[in-house]
Structures are given as C-alpha cells and as structure tokens.
Image (cartoon, helix red, strand yellow):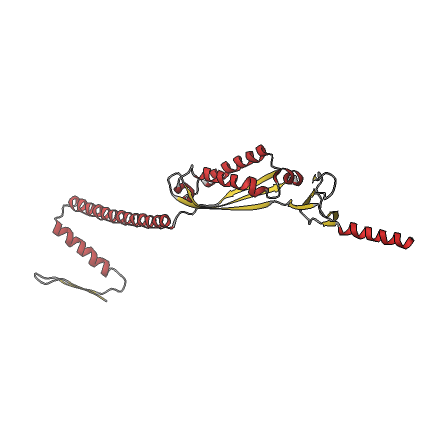
Length: 269
C-alpha cells in the first residue's frame, strides 16, 4: 500500500512539473504573464510583472517580455513633399521608454509601437515637413529644429491623450536629401555664382589699377604744369632721373653719348 502511495505521489509531481513553464526575464526586462486556464478558473493579465530572475508559471500561461530600457525606432521617408513641391528623403529617430509593462500589454498589446505609435509618428513628420520649403529644409537646414520641436510636442501630447504608458525621450529629424537632379542643379548654380564672383573681383582689381594709373598720370601732369614744363621737357626730365637712378648706385660706371641725331647711349658696369 505504501509503495502505491509513493508511486502515486511521484506521478503527481511529474504531472505538476510537466505542466509548468519557466519565466526568466533578463536585466532590463520585465515579464507580463497572461493566465489562460485549460479547465477552470478565470484568466487574464496578472497585475504584477515578473522582474529579472527566475519563477514558474502554469504551462498554459503566456509570458511576454517587455524591454524596459530606452528603445530607438527608425523611420525612413522617401519622396516626402516640401511646401514648394520638391520630393525629399528623410531619416528620423524616435526614442521611447516603457514605464508600466502590465498596462502596456493589457491595454495595447505586445506590438504596441507598430499598432499605436509608428503611423502616428510618420504622419506628424509628414505634416511638419510640408510646412517648409526645400531650401530651408535640405540646403540651409534652418527648418530642421522647428520640425523636431513640432513633432516632439505633438507626439508627447498624443501619448498622454491615448494614455500609453510610454515616456518620450527624444525625436530627431535628420537632414533632408533632395533628388539628384536638384542637388546637381544646386552645385552648378553655386559654381556659376562663384565664377561671377571671381569675375567681379577681377573687374574691381582692374578698375582699381586703372584708377591708380590715372591718378598717377594726373599727379604727374599737375606737377609738370606747376613747374612750367612742356610735355617733351617733362619726358626729358624723367629720362634724366632714370639715368641718375641707374648711375647713382655704388661702383656704377656710366657713359653717355649725346648729340644731334645720335641716340643717347647709357652703359653701366
């Protein structure tokens, strides 16, 4: 009789053990348990999450692991229209952190981001981008901060209205990329503007040089008139000054040949 009792107890323990499942969340995780009895009792989401460690539950109990660390979700947009009708490519990032895993699973399910946040986030980005032109968004990037702020405020308000137990940490909208045709056109325009600028600077330099030459000529003419010389006499005086500069140097030996129709010769050693 005792042997039969022990055998029955052993069988019962084996049955109980085979009907259990292990719940073991890692660090930074919480497990939400959903009881689904096979024969009797009332199922549903348990009010307390399972924290990192090890515990056991009935085999019929579903376990959902929720990441409690900040999570990053990327969004890639192609052909997102600006206010002036130019299609732009965007890369965006939203960072969220779950604050109540039980309420999240119970009210929104394990695919809470895809079902409740993703499309709303994309719509808000599209709406914000459409308010700005291609130049300020993709070229000068002056509108990026405004888009960041607008989308952040609207998503934060949306999470509060829907009572999603998730905290918004940050939204980042990256620099927009215009189509290749627009980008090449901007490069060509910039090169043309640079050429115009270079020509303008060259023209200014020529005008400055011309003004300096005219100014010097006017000064020389004023000096010639002041000392009462004719143009030929003034030229002759300038020639003498030149010869004096050449022969005035130390150890210079000069020879001048001056005569009626003979061209003056100046030599220096």
